[in-house]
Amino acid sequence: MFFSIDSSSDVAVYEQIVRQVQLAIADGTLVGGQMLPSVRQLARDLALNANTVARAYRDLQSTGVIDAQRGRGMTVRRDAVDACRVRRDGLVDEAFRRAIADAIAGGMTPEQLRAAFEDALSALPPTELAEQGATNE
Image (cartoon, rainbow, N blue to C red; front, side, top):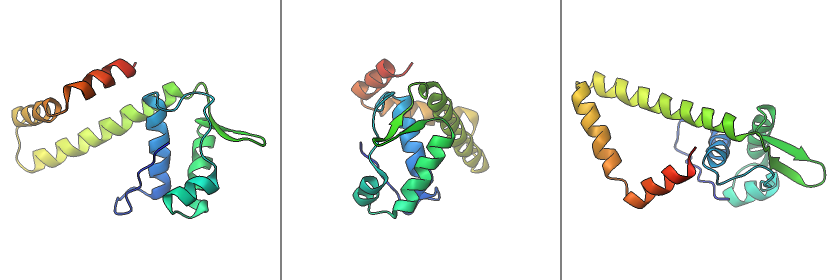
């Protein structure tokens, strides 16, 4: 599994891990029953403090996304997909609302916003759009 941590982000590192696990589950990259890297391994791979990774795993466990398997490690819960998709949709909605508020504050009209969205969407490679449509819901 590949994680990408942005140390300059306003989002705490542990929360970036939480989000990336949830998004990977939402899009099917991680599936129910799949093992996650150990706390030590992920901390080593990302050059992070193990406590940061442990905090992310605790958060994921407390929200019912992952389970501890005695002697094995952390696994993705088989019933986590729906909750992770709801979380993904919430993150996207939040990002859209922030972007829209910033654009309106900057003087953009709804028509300009629609055009900007369509331009951004059409700039995605067609294969990426087709793959995403096939794997999501």
